Image (cartoon, rainbow, N blue to C red; front, side, top):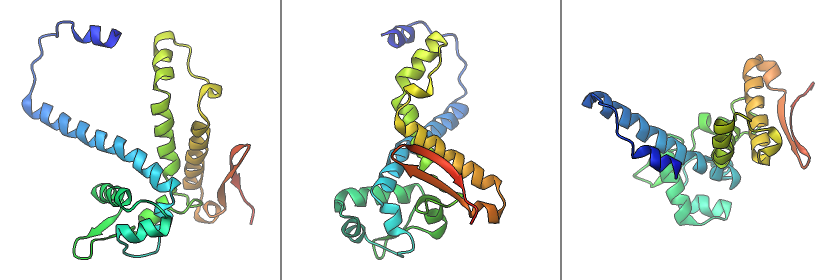
Length: 192
């Protein structure tokens, strides 16, 4: 592989500052955790886990699994990861998890001007399209919208809706809706 051949070349004479290296490695570990959590956010959105927790107060993994008809062990691991990332809170005494209202507004309310799962769909689309993007770097030809998976268009529409709603005043932002249908996605600004 080309990447492997390039890594076998001799390295330049590097003067590594151990403190700066440690700081950078910590940053990379944080980035890795965030990248892995992106998939979990999409799972939470697709399975309705965030919506089931929104406004429900403290819930055990068993209660959430029952409410969403999902497997308790996987839900427990998902909740633990969400707690580690600050998406939900955890009460060790009751072994329960809570989705705070602010996180619920951003993760469970689709017509919220702060709705975030669309941004995570962009990450998913970029990861799936890494080979196409790699080839674009080599050839300079780019990656056309027609070559992207449908999730990329959905993600961009969600992101555009969040950006549009954020730019509007409170009254106008309340009228912004993301319209999804079988033919595609669009941002609709309502008049009511």
